[in-house]
Length: 338
Image (cartoon, rainbow, N blue to C red):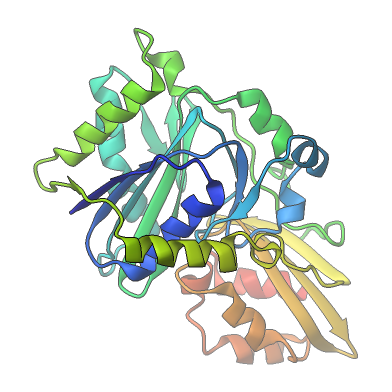
């Protein structure tokens, strides 16, 4: 089993590594890494709706889309990222997977006298305050779960860099401003360092976390550096995908039907351009989780009449829970039809 402690602080590179480990390796991997200040958006989000563009431009912040779902996050050197890659357990639901992969982190914090817990879909909390958000990506029979650990991050920068919108009171039937996608849900955050009995440099904390994880009884991880072939493949992926405008921002078409809702599985916004009763284009945004690409549903609905019968017929061939975890098919259909 492989352990990787990355020293590069390049967010484009680090996100390319994540995809490479998920899609191009076969052994279990545990990875620790940090980014220079950057905004990381979820796979299914509308980037421009998530960021404070003026702040991003003024501070020259990279904005990078990751391969996993969930909401946008701000990274800096006071934040530690951890990643587990392994074979995907058959029949496990998302909640069970988050619990399984975050348990070692919670157990480590307990050794420091910090009582933390997993709450909601994917957040780790101390005394009701969030210090970690986690997300999952699945490729064939492989799963990647990665998360943040706010250790001594700049909380003020988090608030200024992201355009979090309050959406707690928005009912499913509300229509929203055209052109906006679903924003990340705000929550009170904290740093782990606030709860330590004695000050601890972040480098020491990182080393202790690595030692704890890699010495677990059931899984022994060994440090295995990247091969030259792996480095070349990661650099190619970084250059051709993660450094591109197309991947990180994309081009938003003009829509005249925009609706959003909050479901147990997350927030969702649908944007449709309908001409003569036919859906000419559709985009689905949100911080929901999925095990199949949303683009497959979008492709199926493009060219479909904007009617309940036609859309229901198109969706009947999909296992929608694979595309929108914990969002009921009827609720999704209602969102599309209004």
